[in-house]
Image (cartoon, rainbow, N blue to C red; front, side, top):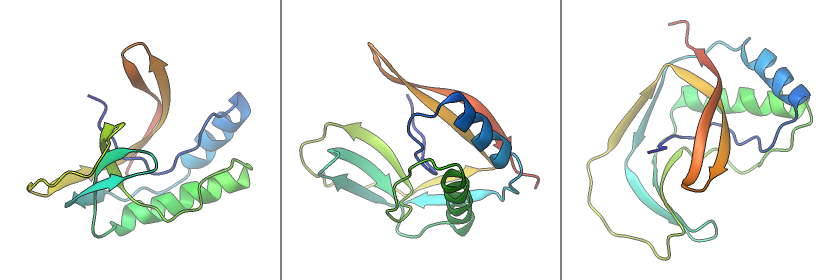
Length: 135
């Protein structure tokens, strides 16, 4: 299973962009993040069912903003919509689902640069670089 939450989607990077992002991200001070996924959401346009948070963790929001600044510095186009932490549960969903569940606590002391690879069995996520908090 490939459960993850995306801090910032960068799209396809060339070798120089990947190097630049990796260098700058390595200079960030990372605070532990704690997300509570307490809502089941259906997003019609991408046709996904996902867990979302009613409140955004400030450390993850700060990291999203710092990573966005790095992307802009290197002229990497990014989505300017507000950061919405989510965990995709189902792609190609056709309708919303009503389901009661206990909130999921998601804690992390690190983040990764990940490449998504399409395979015959679906998308595989390959970690290219990992950064850990100093705390």
